[in-house]
Image (cartoon, rainbow, N blue to C red; front, side, top):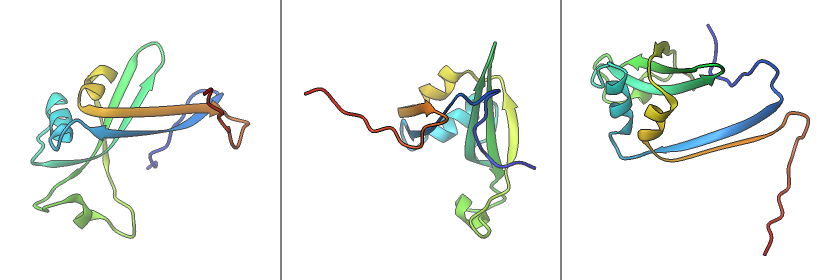
Length: 117
């Protein structure tokens, strides 16, 4: 068992990311593109790894008749199943309205940015 976290071979750059679905069906669209039933699964995470090729995994929980995934949360945790897919990074981005990722050097705690005016 593992928790969702980022990794790379050397971890020279570390960072954060955030995204917004393109609409209220963006997650269903992604599940469908992966051949998964949006009525059966809740999407709780996405892993993207690129080296010489792209790898996209979806982290899902079975809906099991629950109206929303929060009913499956226990002490702030949810146990998900990782499903490797044939999706590409572009497939994921097509389901998003906004996407932001920031990398910084691993040895820097804070980077203060000054903007030209």
